[in-house]
Structure formats: structure tokens, C-alpha cells
Length: 174
Image (cartoon, rainbow, N blue to C red; front, side, top):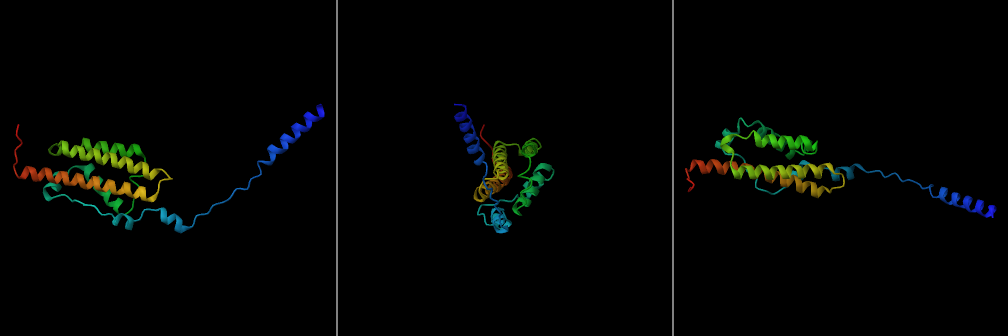
């Protein structure tokens, strides 16, 4: 009986030790495969959307709005495929977007502009999550970049509309 138990234990140990002899494969990526996943300036330039700039009145109003100027700088870098601002630490991006809202000039504080900043905040955080997760496809990341650019363009449009509305002296009924 002891012999059978000893034989059974030996056989079990032999089987479990044999399972560990797997050969690991080394997967090498070519430079073409790495480049195919990278977002290029050409990819971003190929987007079709209405890119609104600021009118001269709007430009004067946002001259001292430091965070808005910084946002425009980061958007220009994004258009050149520099994604570093949007794929960095989420807390820094959230802090920036919060400061963008809190430092907004009083004359621009309307519900419509606040709504566009909220949309910009949402798209910025979404882009951050798309860029920081490794298994997201290039197409999804590009879609996130496009959505953010559209959100910025819509913010510019809303700022322009505010000044156009004010210039036409349209009075709201009370």
C-alpha cells in the first residue's frame, strides 16, 4: 500500500513539473507597425469639421484670459500631433479645465459659453482616457481628437455669437 501511495505521489509530481516547460515567444514589432499606431499630423489635418476662429471683438475680450490662451496653444500643438498635454496626468488636465472656467472673464459668463466649456471638459477627459489606455485603436483615438477639436471650435463660435448678439443690441424680453 505504501508503495502504491509513493508511486502515485511521484507520478503526480512528475506531471506537474512537466507542465512548466513552455517555450516563450518573443514578438518583435517592426517600425512600420509602430508608426501605423501613431497619430500623425496628416491624420489630424484630414479631419473635416468647421473650425471657427475668434472675431476681432472676441479676441480682444479673451486677451487677458490666460487659460484660454494656453488652451489655444495646446490645441495648435495637438493639430501638429503633439498629444503630450492630453495624454498626461488626468488630474492636471482636470485642474486646467476647472481653472479655465473659473478664470473666465465676467462678460463671457453666459449659460451657452459655460455649456461649451462643459462639453470641452468632457471631450478633454475622454481624449485623455483614450490616449492613456494602450489597447485602444488608432481610429478611436483619432475620433477623440476630432471631438475635442470640434468642442473647441464650438466654444469659439459661441463666444463669437455672444459678441455678435451684443453688437446688434438685441434685447431679451423680461
